[in-house]
Length: 495
Image (cartoon, rainbow, N blue to C red; front, top):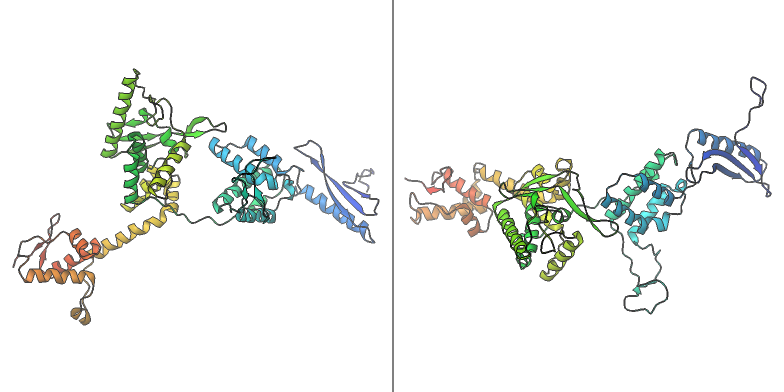
């Protein structure tokens, strides 16, 4: 092809004939950022009458992909992308360890050798489906899972493999990890499109917090209090909703017992070498949590015991010492996994299905059910988003508060006019309570000026809610039989 100045323009891409007669189209696509080698797009056209024409079309198409940057710019594998991404990604230490563990265990053995450019939505969704069937990628084949690799004498620990699906939550986490790495690959122009953005991960699981009920909570505290230090730790976990890492990193100068305030600013974690380290809290914000008088007293007693131990050791108190520690001088904090395991053993002894994080759920649900607004609960727990997480996780527990609100409103409603049938047969629970009180007033068992039983007593005696019992009192007040003064118990009206 000649240009305006008469020189022949060099043709981009080349078409070569293979020994088989097929044509191979080859187009230069830049330098591979991983290997540093020249990167080409290739396509083979089968031999035939239209082979030359088809090859020219393929060359044009590949050139268009290069010009529009729709071609994979590298032959790098997913393993190489993940290594490069982990080098540059600004990820918190504990988050990074979680990412690395999931990638090494589930992703790299299966998809690691696959070129990034060949990864598509179908491959990812097939991968997710396989994880949901079996986390070990057994492919449905029966085999013996040995306790150690290599030659050995099998014991009872060598047993047939049983498929265990990976939870939907874990698969979703893997999806978002891959999405982050592939999004960076798009920005680096290694690939044109993020295949994870086109893949559909499993639906998010429905939040199902399962805190211990008040009776089980009492059993847990009573059992833990055999060791006062351990009991105080669980008590503080219940009353503040602090995370286990935050409790492990708590020091005496974080407590202002005079003001009744606890400041949570650090969190303990184990690094990749198993060493205990500290970092910012999960949301990177310190928070001040108000303490009730009973919790303040628990912490005062704990501090007194700490000072007594130091006196026996002839050591000086240090405000930087840990509040909870396995050492007599409180010089070292607990490992978070130690707290988890010890609590698990305690719950197992009591026959309670629970884990240490459930105490955080306990704090949240008790506050919500007591009528505390969600933003305040979110602030105590350290949830971000102004309470969005709190609402999403604990929405199911708002139903009890909603029912209580409905009962309160019903109690303040005026009495519903009775139909002729209702006047004859008063079968509603509040009406039956009203009938009984009318009879007591009529027979003189309740004299003018006498106080009626408390609403809570009426509710307990008749097996109804407090709102229902209160409605019976409202009905009698409307009939002029009962007199109600604000802040005082209802009395029989004087004639």
